[in-house]
Image 1 (tube, rainbow, N blue to C red):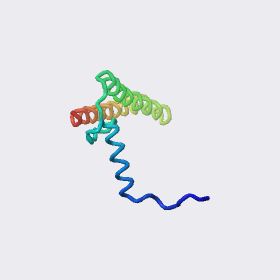
Image 2: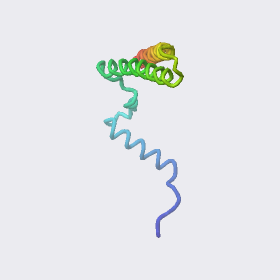
Image 3: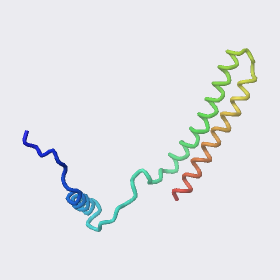
Length: 104
């Protein structure tokens, strides 16, 4: 094999990266925010909030129901874990709302 195992010098890499950024950004050299930081649509955010709240309720209620069947405590664990799931869902909704406000 005749390939050179040594990497190119850092200056060459920096120059190539700068040239590529200029081509992508339209020769102005500006670097845009990453695509992951772009806000989602309002409908997408509404679905996300609804799913987070519903999943907390369903998982909490399901876990409580399973514990009730296992420990024979009729509705006690179902009620307890339903409210714990509701609280967890609300905390997730508040976190999502705070994240949205922080982005804007």
